[in-house]
Image 1 (cartoon, rainbow, N blue to C red):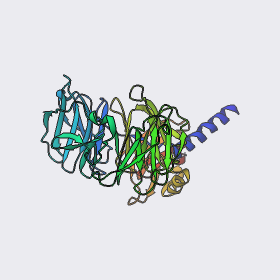
Image 2: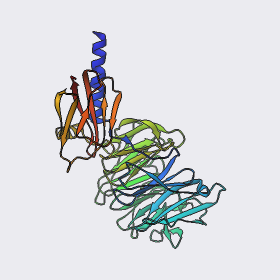
Image 3: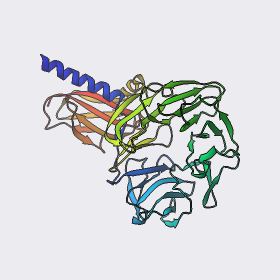
Image 4: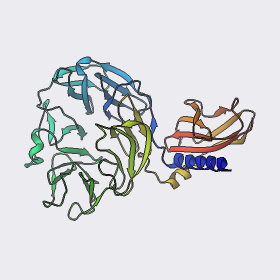
Length: 404
């Protein structure tokens, strides 16, 4: 009786976890080197800079990555960004010289040059086809101060260490006790905090373009929330001691442990209340960074070529939303007959990336990546199994009974 109860608990936990938590799936990176940074031009075409001086490219939305360039001169290459026409990578060479690799998006015209900056650009972003790094803007093959902000994000402008983020339809930067926000990247507005209000300097800020503003400080980790463009604030200490935020929107937040660069962890946190409370998903391998192209196409990556992809904002769908989508995939006959099972779904609405069969203990025993219409069940013992569909709508799980 105890064995039956234990098995039931395992199955119940698996169903609950699959229908809510398993929103990240591993993709084929075709490398075992550390993923340093990535950038997407559109929902299909993206680039990643990798250890050992490698550049990867995907043309299928990040499902598969292929090597397009390698040069040992760029051994420690660490950041990548793109305009409408060019991809630019910055990083230290093996000899300690700052290098810039530049190539056109659609041609293989790779050019390596020395870069005269006194620091290596570490967080370059593109907004309105212009490249920024901290309190600086890339103009004429060099980074110069944002001249439209006289204070220019304070002391850190000389080192490019200020934090700047592309929020989708606007850009924000934070440094010292200031948040700078702009719809164009040229004209800026400023929010200044009273001394002592923040427990430390804000390391990230978010603005929805209308009224909602967020900023995050650390030691301990605190999120500051304003719904009136920074005139009034509330703040909450996060129940995780130190977390690096990735804002999907004002309420939806992803997070990684702040120290994951030194000690990467297997947890990807997600919140639907501006980061006050977090749930998390455990993935198979440690991840160090998150890249968001848009609210649906998001990646988490780390060492050994590890890349995880999410197509539903990193697990921020509510469980009721996922259950509504489950009925759109039909599995029949169930129980099975004649050693096969049929699958029908609206192919105009649902895209299946992979399909796996899981036994009652939660172990994957069969994986399919192409034909999702008919599954052969011959050779498997009778009993209860689960079909796990990795789709553009998230993970959808179906229970099946085999009677061969």
